[in-house]
Length: 259
Image 1 (cartoon, rainbow, N blue to C red):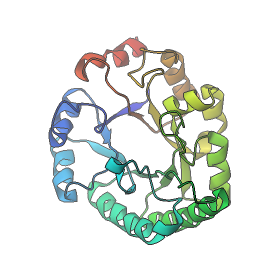
Image 2 (tube, rainbow, N blue to C red):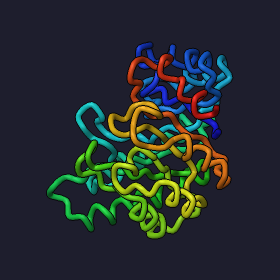
Image 3 (cartoon, rainbow, N blue to C red):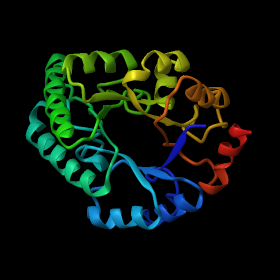
Image 4 (cartoon, rainbow, N blue to C red):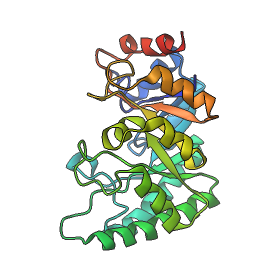
């Protein structure tokens, strides 16, 4: 089985955020990820990681006004300065937390922004971010997301992500492959992962429908997770799902799949 990281934005959210680190450790996780660290001082989070001997696997660049419905600003032409400032903020946090990967949520362009303008802005911003993060020793990821859950999200398929990586032309830009999102958009999970393994630096999971834990839906996780081992994927798999009946009660899938 791969290495599993608890996504503390989605899991153990019956607890205060700062209490989720200990809960993840008690549940047997060795790594954690979450959407954003920016509501807390980095030293405060680093202490939790150290206390419970957890690796900080991944967090995202600042993504705009999340509560207001924004899902990233990288493709927004009028937010370039804010994007650049967010990159520097993310690096500052990552250095303290020893974050292994940083993901860029590209965003939803407004209706009055032409697609080519959004694309040009995104390529420009990713070139900047990839360069800055490379200097800090941190890989930059982009994540295709399904447009059923987030209508209008600018990056919604594997090929589009690969084309974007080519357009940016950086050796520090990679793909975050979310099994749930790509099941909804395109399927063909195993072959897609295998064919693009060299550029996939992080994987996330949830089942479909419902975005609940593995074993609750249509995805054959018993096959797929063993397949990741077979093809040599040695990165983390982030557990970014909604627990159907509480986090701890829903963790039996790990033992069931390994048996």
